[in-house]
Length: 141
Image 1 (tube, rainbow, N blue to C red):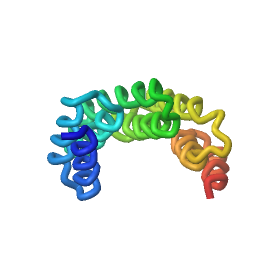
Image 2 (cartoon, rainbow, N blue to C red):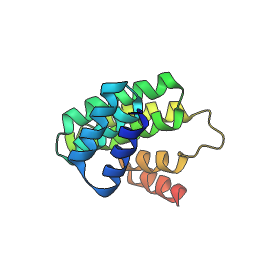
Image 3 (cartoon, helix red, strand yellow):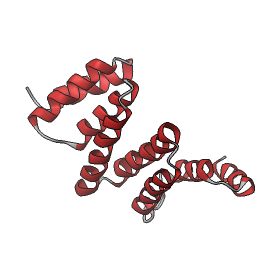
């Protein structure tokens, strides 16, 4: 079986909300070869299954693998997902800010930056100053 088959099955299962099936499919993909898409997919499935710490571990590995592969958008997206998870699931604003800073650094040279609105949105989400947060939300709009 091609490594694309389990990845495609995992993506389809995620899209359908079949978290256990997605997890199993991405595990099958990883058994063939460690690819960032499978690590990222397992991270998403585990989050939905309530296994947040395991989700974070897989998404962090996916981030590093995307960076090694030179996929800036996927790496930044993984970092943004980690940002949200750290703040919403663990109330760890320092870790969330660190992951957002990584995403911003990864995308700093992209012109145009396809994730800029998301980066501003998350920066506003973490911003403790209400006026600055409002300015960032306005920029997103």
